[in-house]
Image (cartoon, rainbow, N blue to C red; front, top):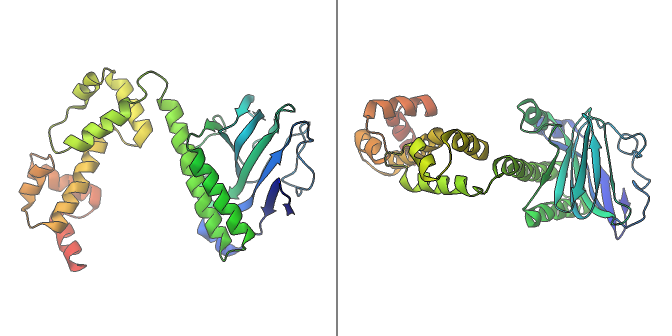
Length: 298
């Protein structure tokens, strides 16, 4: 560990409890690199240290956020990217990489290294890819606040600090993923189309909504609308509508004595049988069983 006015970092032992949690930190810290400084500074343990000439391969993941300055990142396969203030970049296990601040500017870096079953599941399901390791995160206040709380927890030697760091890592990776989805979706002057569509669906979910007609009203093609909406929310427009209706239906089943047919109508389902069949398919119980189960716990 090194603690100075401009830097603080720590590397962590990992227990069986930490591994069983599914996500654990290997290192965390921050470092302000002044202009014309040697980089990286000496003092990092073997397996984390590197030099520009040879680069490095990590056994786990690492997320770095640059809050000021600029520099560059190179990573296989054949990626060379400029890093600006506000950029976050993700390093992957087994992938060669190297990065450095510009001599003229230096930079202020914040990082957390991590591993476990959960991040490897993210990788298997392609939430993140070594082919797209850099994003511009707009939520700077949230990112810096999370890193600040992380450093405070480490300095204070909080009980179960690994679980605190796991929560911070999960939050940071959520922000990274959100920014990544925004980069892929917002590439035209229609940057607010999906937000407008979501508002419309939320306001009118109980009515008959034709998604192709909605795309026309928003002045975009249906194929673009469907693809971008899915990237933004994880659901197609039609599935998003159905999920909203089912959420409302569960509320009505729990809080009212309305007949199932009336609940179906109030949530946009004209066919009670279709509503009941879809409810069972999505929730694994019938509407009546859901109502009875919820009332047993009241």
